[in-house]
Image 1 (spheres, rainbow, N blue to C red):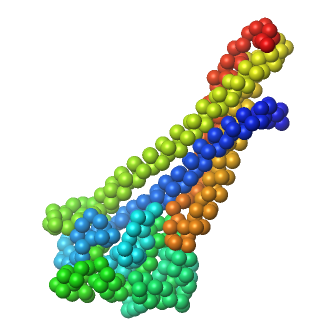
Image 2: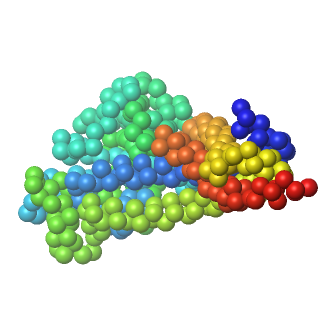
Image 3: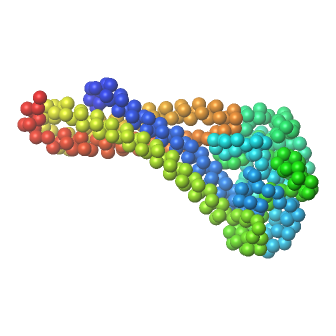
Length: 386
């Protein structure tokens, strides 16, 4: 209690200093939560592509890529070490995709040929997965349930077409959360009519289009080596193995994460400077008190511990209040975003603990100079201080 009383001797100054730390931690928590969500999306994608090779007509991987022919499946399956090829259609949920904050909502249709070899498993909150022979059915990711008002047995509208919901996925914190899965033939029809210009449609059979092909290597085959070999055989296509996928997504994510945490840490450092200022002023105001304590035998270490404790408390209070403020913002933002399927923040235990710990140690660090100055005071001169 004595430490708290000392901290709040000047209530307004202490409150403003704590507020500075609070704002810094708030920025760290909010921006860090955004980086954590993106990191989980990247990790999920990395796990999904860890044992397979993808083939597309461009490097866009389906979001705006030109169509391939499903006839390529047979040709690709004749390549040594390719066990199976599976076609899919991937497109955005909205016909006209404007600027979006986070991962766009997707519609995905797969021919389900690779389902037996798929290592990336997804569980269901309700209902079931798509099955061969389904038509007009849909499986909805967890982040789109509220937006689509999806319930098993009800219908949802996807690109102006009605689909019966047969399954709702459990949350994975990866791409499936923000996706709707429909039968391959239905996806072909939508892509054909909505994504292809009329001049292109006249030269393409709707049942032969696909935006991507997934290759499943034989057991024991390195997918990266297989991707390199296929790339040499088919240089006109974009062939991506696990290593290249990870390189592509992690390089972009690394830059974003660095910027995000850089801004947040700068905010915290500004708060740290306010702690240094507050503690320095406190030392000057309590010069006579320090002189009295030293004349009564207080050691250098005891004086240092006293002021370090006070600066640490400032950092801790600011850290906890910043975490609570950030948590409240994330809850509100995610609740508002959940209705549109745009959940971009994820507050993890390591981020919460790390933010408060960083503020606590920043408080200690900021108190080092004022504490050292207080401990080195000459007790006689301190007692004469007016």
